[in-house]
Image (cartoon, rainbow, N blue to C red):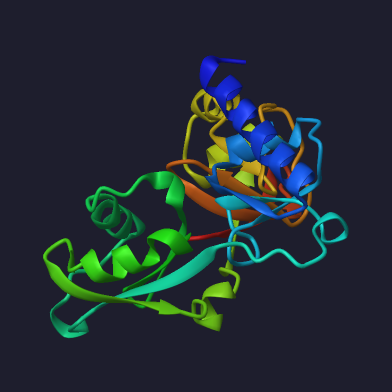
Amino acid sequence: MDNEDKLLQKRFEELSGRSYNKGIWVYSDFLTTAQQALLMSLHLPCKFELFGGYEGAERRVACFGSEENCGYEAYPPIVCLKIEPLSQKFSDAFTHRDFLGSIMGLGIKREVLGDIIVYENCGYVFCLESISQYICESLESVRRTTVKCAVTDAPPAQTAALPDEEEFIIASQRLDAVVASVYNFSRNVAKEAVEKGLVSVNSVLSLNPAAKLNEHDRVSVRGSGRFIFEGIRRETKKGRLWAAVRVYK
């Protein structure tokens, strides 16, 4: 365990201990999948839950406590912001990186921001409640486009729809083999990505390139994207496998 992980472990222990001793819910900042994996490996004084603002969120807040110990439900301090161009007609085409870069350009740290969903050229940004007003008041543009920002209940229901299935030829159901096929990596590059802690399966960090993927497993590759492995559909005469995969664009 390196020094950064040791400091993070100490932080988790402090948050958990505070919840246990005071009988209140205590919340972390947004955690990466690697940080969530570290948290789940620890034996802490009290229970915890993970929330990201919506089902399937990658970056999530740890909520330390339980209804039994605290006497009330958890209310994670997570807010969803909608960022949209003042004029879609004259707007640039936005990407996840555009929204993230513009927000962090305000001097905001990444750990107060959760996932960002882009839909119909609008950004739906999950963030800590403590920073939401500042973002709404300060964010004036994304790239060269003037935007407006406001709190919203949730992204449109359409954003929860699953991507269409695509078929990929894979050598096997090994994690590195599927990642290599989906993102057109070499097997060595895919293997290294897993070993470096860049790949998570079902929101849990996986460091084993040979791990077998099962139907409906959700895979996230940092810097590349996410997909759902839906299983093997058929096998060619030469023994190659056709797998169904839903890739988030």
